[in-house]
Amino acid sequence: MKIIILLFSLFLTACVSTDSLQSNGDFGDHYIVTGKNYEQIWHAATVAMSTDMNIVESHKPSGIIKSKVVNGTAGKVVGFFIQPTDANAPRYKINIVSKKPLQSNYDSDGEPTVWEDFKHALK
Picture 1 (cartoon, rainbow, N blue to C red):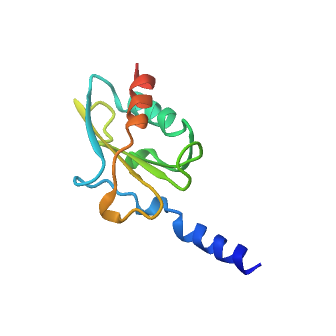
Picture 2: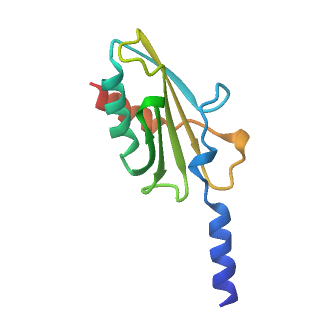
């Protein structure tokens, strides 16, 4: 029984919270999208962030979607950040940040498959 409790405790400490995902110029991958409006970008982002993931936070007015991976690295979380959130901006900056369990806050990286899913949904 003690082993089960210990393993459960280790599992809980290995989980990453979506709260730790922030749009920061130093972390993740950055992309620029032109020729699309905010509604099109938001829709494609929602599709991409629900592919092999569960969306746990979605706030369209601030351009934020956060998901937990369900098929792939257990405990991994991904954030998708869109700026600006204007309906018809000439260009949009996309920042995709992902974190794996036991990864430090300074080791956040992008998630290339999310970008590919996003581009496919944006067509």
